Figure 1: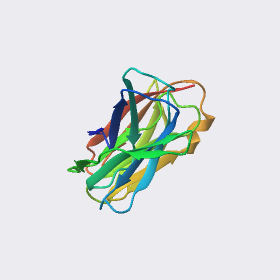
Figure 2: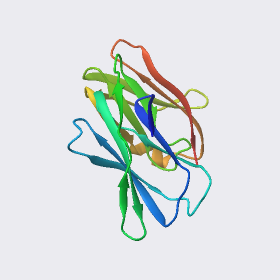
Figure 3: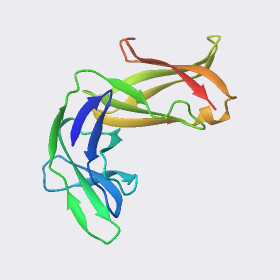
Figure 4: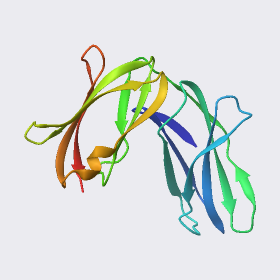
Length: 178
């Protein structure tokens, strides 16, 4: 098991060298090693006698130390737990990560911030015409916004631009609406 900070989240990866009657994996997170929260469930790829790689993305890690482990659930009810890996999520500025690109309906953006602050969110079409603009409060730690007005957009390419209170660009991404 391995955990690496990726943007505003953490990518957890693991591999198996042999699987028989495996049903699924739960990816669990903790800050204290006693209380665990399931953050993702990943289906098994089936019986295998070769190395199989898996990964899951934690879009909302805690600021500071995060502990991760994998619980493997078999079809016969047996459960096994991996070793624990520790990662310190450093937040020295506000970062943003779009969860799905291309998107179908809403645009979902996860933030990781070292302070509560207002950010400016703008969605433009490919010609630069402003489609949507809003000021949104981002909380210290992890937070998420959902741009539901994007569901009404036509298919095509758009630009999502997010800036902090000082005008510094946090995110400037091309997005595709399906």
